Image (tube, rainbow, N blue to C red; front, side):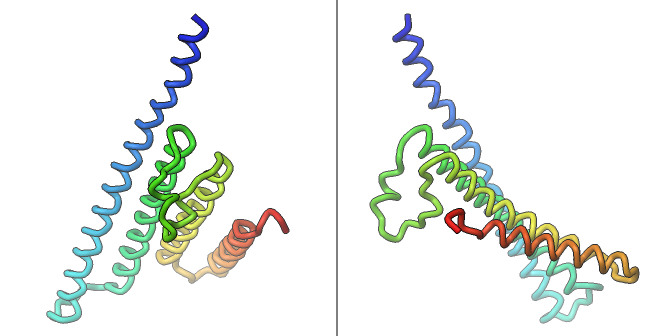
Length: 169
């Protein structure tokens, strides 16, 4: 009975493949949707700048769409890193990734803390991009808004510093 239970418990780790495949599907959807949105934006750009159609605040619209696309691409990367990390931690090492000299070390996860650190940095980037996307819509007619933006930038700089600070220093 003990052997059966331990085998069942050990093999239950394969349920993490549901998370891996779900993340891969979500990543693919985000990449495709963001690429399609950027293609539509390119067509609008051509329509406005080369065909002469007028759109009010078009520059702001373009910047907002590009920032949204970057945000979506970063989220897709979080899903990819998470999927690869969960697979390497619970199922098996990705031999193919370890054989290639050109493989990025960001996709090679050695521990749960390693996965957490890598995801944390990308999530921090998503938060920074989201902050700047929201700053676009702020009107700076009140000194308090300018103060809030300055405080937000200072906090982002601090988060970036702490996120890049090596634990050995």
